[in-house]
Image 1 (cartoon, rainbow, N blue to C red):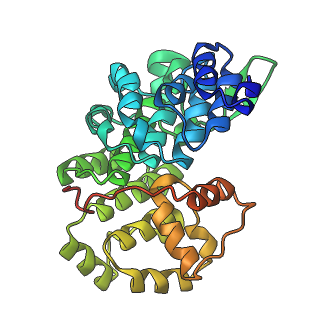
Image 2: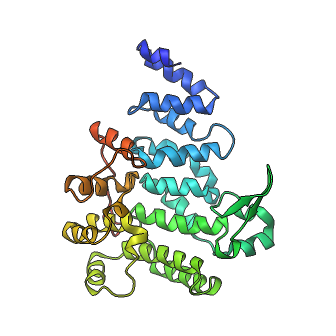
Image 3: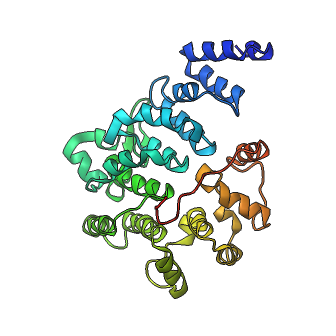
Length: 314
């Protein structure tokens, strides 16, 4: 199929790629056409083949490229799924800054949390299908989950990832919703447990990132409760600061720890990566995950996300 491109037959190449049923070949066609990939072909690469292949495709491509030109087609493809959006898809659209996914993400986030062990007792192993849960293989086709009391069910993981995605997309989240989530965590995850700590760290960053500018600055100045763990959310906290024009505060933060903690080649973090590289706060290594793709896109002049205001008001 590549020979069509070599002959300058781009239209014929695209037509053939759109008709192709081999997901691996369609994926390769997308890369051959970069940076000018037709939206229908990009979307097609996200759903060919049996799971988890399509999910791996969207997770591996969307977060590392500017796909805003295809946002409508991507949204139209996933909108019918509603609350059934997969965890990987939720993560990808947040990294990809596809703000139109807001109504779908709000539907996903409007659920109760449930510990994985309790969810499996209630509905069997389907409660953790598609989630990120620790396991070991006990046979060719059998797995054994190893830490269910300290993990959330797949649906609960989706709730938390939807909240994170909404903030990466600069959409507002009602403080009342976050408080309800924290109340659930306190009730379900023992204080001091890894599940409790990890989830609270997530909710702390979501709350911090969504603060109005004045409250955001006051919290930074006070250094009090409510500040998220920088080591856990470095790239997102760095982005939070940069969005608010706090470059000096960002520089001090980076200087006080390993700069690599702030590294992320995800699309929503491109402006941060550009800033860190241009100011010498972090020297990029093309061998880092996603760095080569980022640098190629930068050389092509492909822009990062058009941020809305940090408070979520366009």
